[in-house]
Image 1 (cartoon, helix red, strand yellow):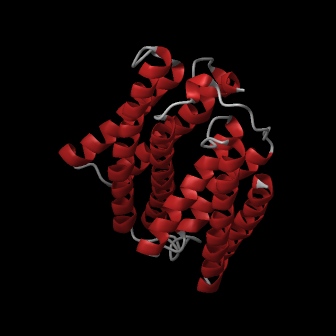
Image 2 (spheres, rainbow, N blue to C red):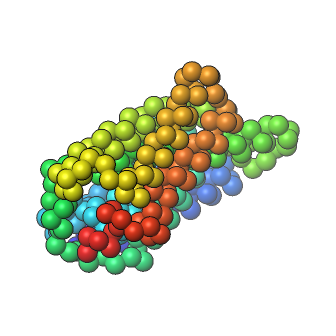
Image 3 (cartoon, helix red, strand yellow):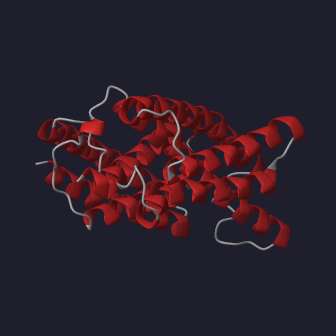
Length: 274
């Protein structure tokens, strides 16, 4: 049953992404509203899929590659919808929806079988660590999108050309502020996610930190965002530098989330839990 709702969510997300792209081209608010409506309905369907998956599996559905892609995309849509209804930045969906849709589509191609939960994952700390980490990554995905939007808008303003995005994107000030707010929310989530993961590791493997590849890259990612936060608060970094660092930081997030598990073997390898 969970897969039916997941497929439906993917289908609706695709319409949401297309509607936002049409809005960018036409600049008609109707298509933005339609796009948000599709993404909202898709999010409800996706949430239903996760609930069914939870009851069918008997544990938080976040223990293999398919479930991780599904939960990551769900978290990104959750963060996007909260930000949209708070700030009403219509064009934001044209950047966030494709990112979430790509994750959903990749999930469609992955094995979706439900396996018995590995003993190491039967922990009180699993939901806390996983949910906090993915929510933090989702906020950083938003910062990544606003960083791209900032660079596009700045380029159009400096080139003094009326590009397709000039009237569609918010001001540089708003984009920079949203980038900063994303950092101030995402960094604490990442920090607590790493801490709870260390506590969990102590119970599961007898050590708070074992320099597993994923642990190492999580720490590298943490230092990148810590440096960005420090530069913004202590030195006053704004604008282009902050936008570029947000993009680099999210690339590190993606490598930590996916690249480490597929390229480097370790305790966090998804194949280990099957």
